[in-house]
Each structure stands twice: as C-alpha cells, then as structure tokens.
Amino acid sequence: MAWVPLESNPEVMTKFLHKLGVPKKWSIIDVYGLDTDVLAIIPRPVLGVILLYPVTKIDKIQDDISKNEHTKYDAQESIYHMKQSISNACGTIALIHSVANNLDVIQLEDGFLKKFLDETKGLSYAERGERLEKTQDIIDTHMESAQEGQTEAPGEDIEVYHHFVAFVHKNGSLYELDGRKPAPINHGTTTPEEFLDKAAQVCKEYMERDPNEMRFTVVALAPGE
Image 1 (tube, helix red, strand yellow):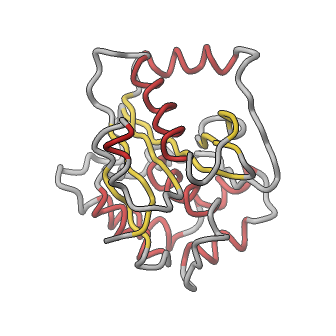
Image 2 (cartoon, helix red, strand yellow; image 1 turned 120 degrees about the horizontal axis):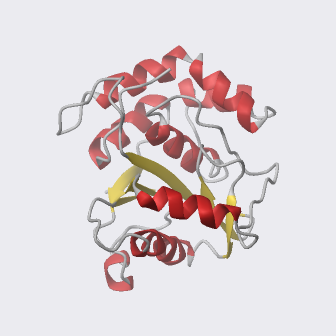
Image 3 (tube, helix red, strand yellow; image 1 turned 180 degrees about the vertical axis):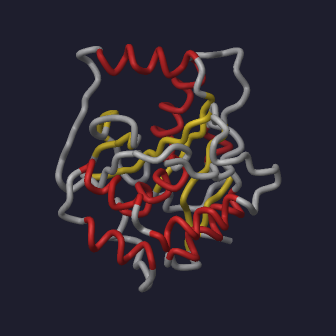
C-alpha cells in the first residue's frame, strides 16, 4: 500500500491536524535555523519537532549507527510508537507520534485521531501500523491534505526520497520516533524547557552526516499565533 506523500508545509500540516481534531491553539511552525537565537523566537511550549531528511547515504549511516551498541532503543509502554507499513505515510505518522505523546497537554477534540488513539492505545507497535491501513477517515484526510501543498503531489507509485521522523519529550528523555525503527530511540535526558534545543542538536547531527546535502526541513508543534 502507498499514499501520496505529505509536503513539509506548516500550513498544510496544521490544517491536517485541525481536521483530525487537534485544537486550533496548536500549529505546525517553520524552524528556520537550529541556532539558539533562531530557536528563541518559536512560541513555547514546543511539544514536538519533525525533521524531513533526504533518504540517501544518511539512511545507510543511520542503519550502521542503529546496529551499534550505543543506540538506545527504549520501548516503554508509556511511549506511543507505531510501525510505518504504508509507503509515503511517514509525514502523517510523524504528526501522530508528536500528538499522541503529548495528550497530557493537547486536549484532543472528538474526531478521527482521538478515536484512532483510543482504539490503538493497548496495541503493539506493529498492530497500530496495521490499524492505520484500515482507518479510512485518516487516509481520506491525508490524501486531501497531500494535494494542498505548493508543489505538485507525486503519484502514489512514485518513489519518494525523503523521510519524516519526530522528536518528543517524554518521561524526562528526548525520544526519536521513526515508524521504520523497531522502537523509540532515547537521546538522553531533557526537560520541556531544554527540549527544542536538544532536538535541534540531534537534527544537526543528521545534517552533519551528509554536509553537502541541503534538502532538510525542520518544523515544530507549538502554540499558533
């Protein structure tokens, strides 16, 4: 199964989340730079950071790092993590990961996402991914949003060379959530106040793995204007 990919466009992503039942006070906001002074202008609290990166040799390096004993996979039950079993669904999954791990702050309205999260709360990583394949309301909303970007949406069968991952603060740690990884990756301790700066540091590490590559974008889930 393949979807049309979601564009890394804050306006499109914000509209998508609001259609799913995320309150209007929360938005996806562009992160224009990863230095502290640029990060300081982003409204707080920042609940999630989403990195879009080109799937080139970075993934090979990432796989090598993942096999390394220093990678801290951390499958705590309190962290909502789901498998990506649908091609091009990584944007939607990154958004779901960002919201689902902040339900203590985000009061979801009755809607497609609240229903999905309630129904999948007790399921495994793989079962959640399978359930998404059958959740027509979210599929339809994704497809509608995928057509709203500034660039022409590629077809479902076109291979896409970018991938979204999400970062959240949970239980005092910074977690990387990737539907293609077997479990969340723990990047060490953080606080809600430090979270954005520490997530930005991990994004910088991604970029340093391929310094000649410019096609990275970073957005944040934060209070809207």
